[in-house]
Image (tube, rainbow, N blue to C red; front, side):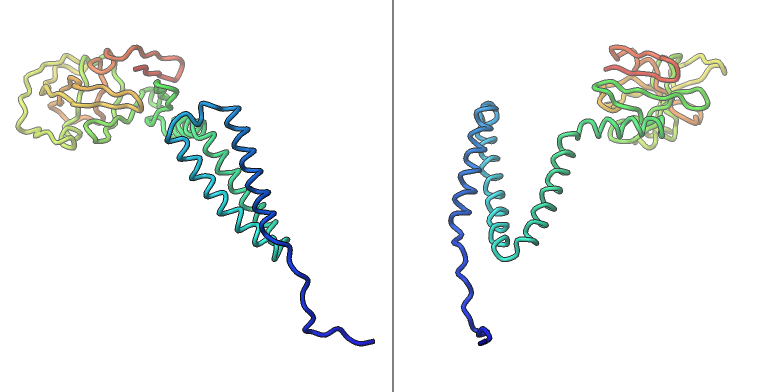
Length: 241
C-alpha cells in the first residue's frame, strides 16, 4: 500500500460569502422586528446614529468570529461564549444601574450615618449612637458635617468650618445674639450661596458664624424651614425638598 503523499492538496474551503449574507439577513430581520415593536426608539436622529454605530461594531465582531470559526471552530465557540457572557454582564449592570446606586446609598447610609440614603428626592439619615442626626452637606463646594438641630433658628457654622469656607472669621461682625441652654452666644451673620444634601439643594441660606469653637456646625431652621417637610420615625430622619 502506498503511503499518501505529504503534498496532497487540502480540500477546498467553503466560501465565506454565504455566512456573511446569512448574518446580514439575520441582523436586518432583528432590526425590523425591534423597529416594529419599539417605533419610538428610532424617532430621533441621535437614536438612528447610535443604531448604525452599534451595527457597525456588531458587523466587525461577527466577521472576525466567522473567519475564526472557519479555521478553529472550537476556539471560536469559546471566544463567542466569553464575549456573550461579558456583554450580558455589561447589559445587566447598565439595566440595573439605578437600583445599584440606590443599594449603594442604603449601605452607606447604614454604615456611615452622616452620608444619608437617597430615595428619589428625599434623604434619610440614621441616628448616631449619641442620639443625634449628623449629615454631610456640600456648602459652596466644600464638604461640611452638620448636626441637625431644630432648636437653632439659623444654620450655625463653627469658626473652623467658616475658615474652610473662606470667611475671614477675625474680620466678621458678631452682632447676632442667640439664647441657648448654655447661655447667650454671639454670631456673625453670613449667607451661604448653596447648601446641598444629596439631591436637595438650596441657595442663599441664612447662617451665622459662632463666636466660640464648636465640635460640629448646626443645620438649623433657616435650612429646614425651606424644605417641603422633614420627619423623624424611630431612629431615622427624612428630609424632603
